[in-house]
Image (tube, rainbow, N blue to C red; front, side, top):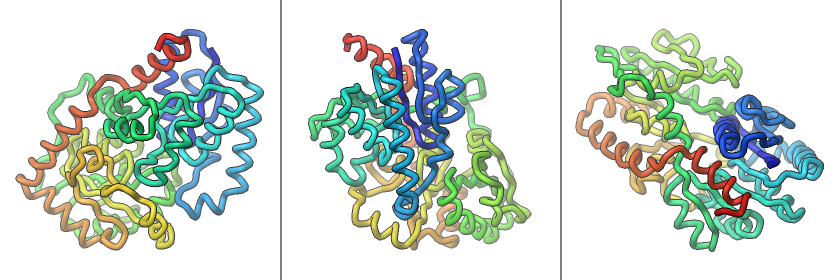
Amino acid sequence: MRYYLVAGERSGDLHGGNLLRALNQYDPGLTSRGFGGDDMQREGMHLFVHYRELEMMGFLSVAAHLPRIFRFLRRCKHDLLKFQPDVVILIDYGGFNMQIARFAHQKGLRVFYYIPPKIWAWYQGRARNLKAWVERLFIILPFEKNFYARYGLVSDYVGNPVLDAIKAYQKGIDPVPVVRQSARPRVALLPGSRRGELKRIVPIMAEVARLAPNWDFTVAAVRSLEEECYLPLRDLNNVSFMWEQTYDLLREANAAIVTSGTATLETALLKVPQVVVYKTGVVEYRIARTLVKVPFISLVNLIADEEVVVELIQAECTADRIMAETERLIHDPVRQEEIRKSYDHIYRMLDVGSASENAARLMVQYLRGKG
């Protein structure tokens, strides 16, 4: 069969690559094409557009790049009609992919959505659009199933790809975390993988490092960003860098300071106490405040449906507040045990097998009319 996949970010490329690997098992000889990145290309997809060309963040960034977004939408639509796939598989990247979902549906193409947009957080009315344009949803958070059911949407909870990645990492290594016992605690800094995130968070993380000269800080850095993004941290004596080795870093950390996003769940599944931080532009934050419909921003707290980890957002995201909470994570054993028990509960909730394999198996079944 012929598959057209659309992923517009680094994480979507990772999940898309794993999905394609599984699809190749259930549908040998398939043909795939679309928007994505190196991981999807390695699994045999003909890469029409690399996600790096689409990268943007925040309301204002999107508004500033509208002409470019429309240009890529036109290119995607034209390529879809030329390729004529058996199914269009959309992966996250809600704003762009919702437009593609509508177009593909109007042209009579079957549409599956793997990791649909977080409309339960804001713009909940978009669930009606998903119902109209998407044949099947493949969700990765347990609480999403009840939300979509309220709108009459059919969804399959397939597991969580973050847990898949953690299990793959842990396979063959000592299950006991290698947390360094030292007079100098080791704190992992996870500033994110988007330029906009680093621009606001890295200077605050640098200030925390200056406030704690007796702690060792290590940055989880990514090669997809220029080294200049980490500049405020570069010359601090108690700060080091690990490139593309986030899990290795977390395995040795006593605590972590994590920008809200997928990394909060990764940190939880690796059982590292964390404080979640987030800061954006003033206007963007005010817009978000009027739209957000959930009590938390971190996946950890959303999945647990309670405050497992402290979230320091916007005005509360200061070096002093972060420092105080991190010190508590390092030195308070009662707090550490509370967090780890909640982490264990989250792990059990998510553990239903490989998300990519479950999704691929179901997709092929539905396409062959066996589901």
